[in-house]
Length: 303
Image (cartoon, rainbow, N blue to C red; front, side):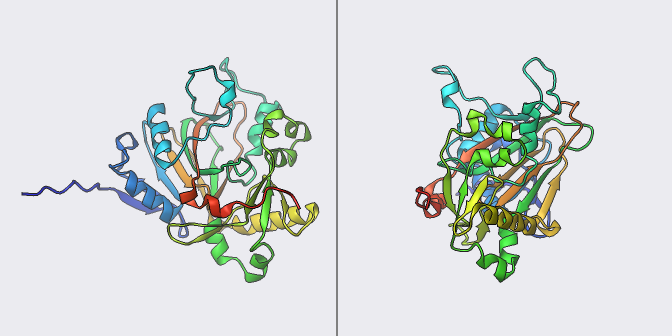
């Protein structure tokens, strides 16, 4: 008698009418390439953002789950000693001695740069497919992370606004998003490690054909416009994409895990009491040609 594999049982609850679902009934520690991950990847393609609550996810599980999506994003391999393993990046104001950085410290100012709407890693030669973010230390108030579906927004965008960017490319640089809040911060060498990246303005999902606007606070120029015009148009596009109907705001509890499609979702942090410690672990996986990367590349030489 042939036995059938046991089907996973989980529940989906929409986060908004336009995108995102909460997934209940999956323990991320149990996910493998064959078990549950195919379901998670399908939900990821369909809904763009997934929430898993009350996860006791170990660092090993965090990295293993990220690797199922694609190669781990490793921005600073040269900073490690030979044979030293990559550590999970943190979004945190907690310093090595256990104290918190002051509100006006450049470390905190750098965290505040994340209060701008952005997609991670658009300034890298190979950008991110997914960010898997989990809460380790949360504050008494504030500190929500907000998500905006540029896929839902693009589908609803007025044709006249679409026409101003459709078929064009955008230039991305890490220093640009920092320059918007601090000239001093923008000069840090870490924000000048990579040359400007030139990507199409619209990312077509190769699985379902749905399109999303690919924008971030890292954009400094849009093809066909000068710098001032580019930044004004970027602000207009971001304003449309972050209308309430396209946004989900997540208030963190320890153990929450959010993962989202970096091709189709912007996000930003929000303020918290800066004298309180806050720590989120964040791991990105890099996009591959099968995710649409090859189709997004444009000539890297500036016109």
